[in-house]
Length: 309
Image (cartoon, rainbow, N blue to C red; front, side):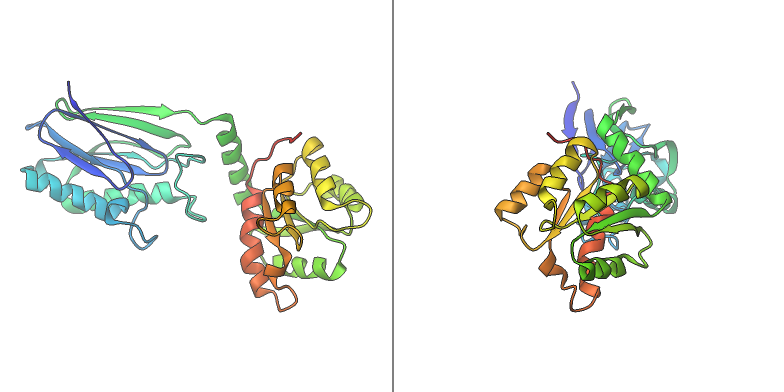
């Protein structure tokens, strides 16, 4: 019975005995090295292509992790020229298997490229690849036989919907509807969004009733919503919205501060984000507003929301 070894991100293992090395991959990549004559082999599991992309340990960065695995094999008695390599993973996966690091949608492709570059430089022949796609993978190497089993992990319906929405938002700008009773605030938020490569304003409304009409016309991807407004307050509007026509909604209000009762209520009602309007410092210029507001609106645009209540 092979000795079982399960690799977490940043880990690697090289075995001179019969071992079964396994791991789970999303956008991460595993490089497998195997010596067919000696029947020794190993594997790594890394998250990013190189150390310049993030401040992670060497084992989590493809260029260093693959170099380290080659050195481990060499020290064990396997010259690089006698090794065979397999490169697995690098999927465009959303959900628990993915590596979240800002706008790194192509990190899987770059992980694969990093591994191939190091293997080519070391003169190691790649005999098998199973990379890309939109699904995760479960793999297991039996070092005693060299057999590598790769099993696709199907995406959930929610993950498939999120992937489709993310792809759609890459192809066009996300439409934002601003709902606030202050014309000054609406104007400042509109100016903050102007010029964004990812967002555009599709309408402005001073109350939820006007917002409802604009929603029918503009079909927004995100709603930027105040709480204190005439005719109908933002919380009541959010509850109706999420019950009948869910749209990702970011609350921008002075009364929904972190830890407040209102913050809890809007999150329970289905808001995907809450911003304290005071933190935007919108009366002091637009730079702070852009830095704090735009990333949250962009993330909201790729969020899949469902009916609440």
